Image (cartoon, rainbow, N blue to C red; front, side):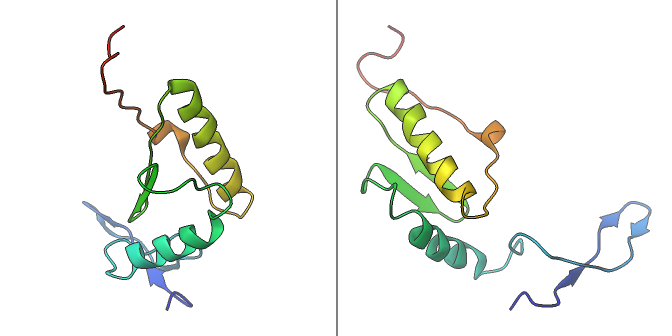
Length: 105
């Protein structure tokens, strides 16, 4: 499906020259989220605990943990596992949400 895929960059000054897309998944494709989840399912079996502790949706991952330290441990396990299989992880886009009885203490 992606073999020979080409694209252009649109700017206010016009479109760039056509170039081949060699990495990533196509934005806006209805199949992209499904393909991503299928691949992530296969390569993440070793580090997954189970639902509801990890949730995959489109190209996002939700990791749930009972402590911040354990969350960081789990995220690093995920990152190392997928990067060892050639997928790049941008930890700068990672967000942490804390909820529960001890929030703010």
